[in-house]
Image (tube, rainbow, N blue to C red):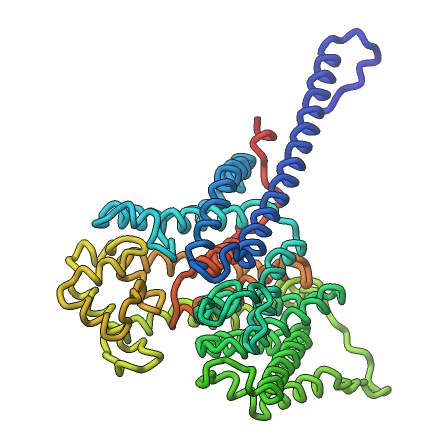
Amino acid sequence: MPFRERGSLDYPASSAQKEVTMKGLNLHTQAGRLLTLHTAISSCTLLAYAFVVFTLIPLAMPNGYRDLGEMKCGLFLSCSRFFLPILLYLILLALTRSRAFLRQASPLLLFSFLPLFFLLISTLLASDPGSAFNGSYGWRMGFLTFLIMTVSMLAFALLPFPGTVLYLPLLAGAAAASLVAAANRFGFDLMTPQLSAENRQDFLSTLGNINWLAGFLALTIPLAASLLFSPRRVLRLPGGLILFLLLSAAVLQGSNGILPVLAAILLLLFLFALSDKDCLAPFLTFLIVLGAAMSFSALMTLLLPAAYNGPPDNLLLRISRSPLGALLMGIGILFLFRKPKERTLPAALPAPDIPNAPEGDSARTPEEGFSRRAACLIAPTAFFLAVLLPLLLLLLQLSVTLPRSSGNFRGFIWHVGKSGFKKLPLLKKLFGVGPDCMGAYLYSLPNFPELLNEVYGSALLLNAHSLLLTRLLNSGFFGIASHLLLVSFALRQGCGALRIKKKGSPEQLLLLASLLGVVSYEIYMLFSFDQISATPLFYVLLGILAAPAADDGEETLSDAS
């Protein structure tokens, strides 16, 4: 209620009102300072977490290549135990600062905790709950790891993060690991030159073997590609250089699973370019960089044929030795630097009278987000690639027996996984045998150890080399259903946010990177498995994609009180 002019200072009510007003202003000032402090602490914590988990751990090799997977799992769990209580505290502060924000975050909380809930039940029902909680040796994809990754996902979804600075820890480790991998393909071991070839055990980079490297590249290539959409040259240039390095490593590393990943990224970038003219230049630039990486890698193998030690069945490298790389570069350069024809109206015709633009896409300015047409093209395509296609492959795996040696013996692995699943009782089919417990379950079945030893000898088969089939055994129908619901929710949130965020802004760039990364990871997981070098980054990108939309008109709890 506004103050009335009393004409004198003899009214105690006026003084009381002024005192209350001053107290209210002080409370608002204190609340603003606390909010600024919370933002600063949250940004620094997320930046530190990203630097440790995605830069230091991928490059850490204290024991060389010996027990590299278990060593990285131990580092991840040890560092995450330090960050976990801090992130939980900051998340709780963020959720309690605003009733409106809590309402907006409720769907994310529901879809995030559903997979954890079913994983917890699966852990409690496992024959060895301790192993289900901690995970198997060398993999550690048990309940504890998924708990940590879910908290990190919520942290990047609900807390303010430091904008484009976040790219530095996310891409620094990837660039260094890719450089090591490319050098190793020609006999140059930049990290452990004192080790003999036998001691390296065919490991390719600081991340591990080709499957671990390819899984990491499936997430980091979209991160580098998203920088091509930035209006700032200071971001586009290093983004293009890092993208060239990552793509060169992808061509040389030897896993054919990277081919469908690149195809999915190209398809999504093409749809962006088709629906929005501002996305044409980044798409053409990606074509140029991809063609350059293919041509450079093929040229290096021709110049140093004796030094190249990659697998002979590297399909992407064989494609790169064709003129396709030069063709991609030519197409990109031709259309990127082609001058558009200017269209002018005849002088006799009057200037058209353009009415006020109606509400909707026609009222959008070039600085705003992507159009409705872009969302209509991207959203169903991303949903098909990340959700429906894995489901279709799972149905194929459960109903059809492929040749034993197809896909580097994936036909055999999928048949073993299908046979093991059919032997489960109904309760286990619903909840699974426990996180990361597929291997222990298969080797406990009659005649299965002998069958597996025929192919793997002393090595152990711990997953089905296909994400949904592995999770079907580990966490059951409820596990894969809750996972696909979470991915679907994140895609829906992300595609909607891309239409709101300003083009070229740090938020939109990270949203675009997360959308491409989530889809490409799910594509790679058609033929691969969760791994400590890649899955934590997938959950971070999932969190950025699923973040609730900001509401400038929200009422804070301090305001309401």
